[in-house]
Figure 1 (cartoon, rainbow, N blue to C red):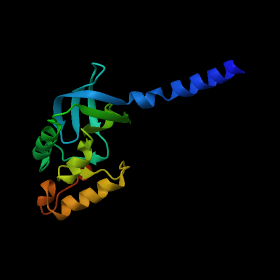
Figure 2 (figure 1 turned 90 degrees about the horizontal axis):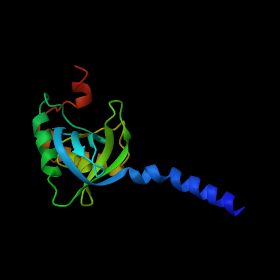
Figure 3 (figure 1 turned 180 degrees about the vertical axis):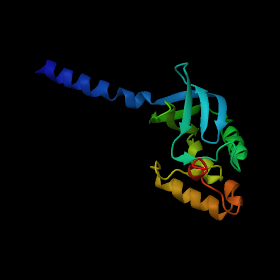
Length: 157
């Protein structure tokens, strides 16, 4: 009986390990592609593309695209080690995740300062929608334009 209990315990604990492996500390940014995509060296030494979860930033060739990229670069210049919480991969094999500077979500901060839209199709944190409304009301970042075009519409053109 004790062997069976041990086997069940071993199976349950090892099957949850990937959840813990999805949080990586000491993320080092190599390159910022745009306001929601970057290349980084993870704590395991591997270089990976990371797509910020829950947000969609203007494309580089879109109005406010270069400004959005600059905002993300600025936020990633963090005095403490960056942390990545991975939630999976997208169809391009990029890690989808949330990056933290100390305990502050850079993904949510991008929305709060008007650097990106909430990607409602994939949003899981209710506060991020409130933060987008706040940025829009204050006409911050991309919301300073009279009719900013969301990236998901821009890409269809």
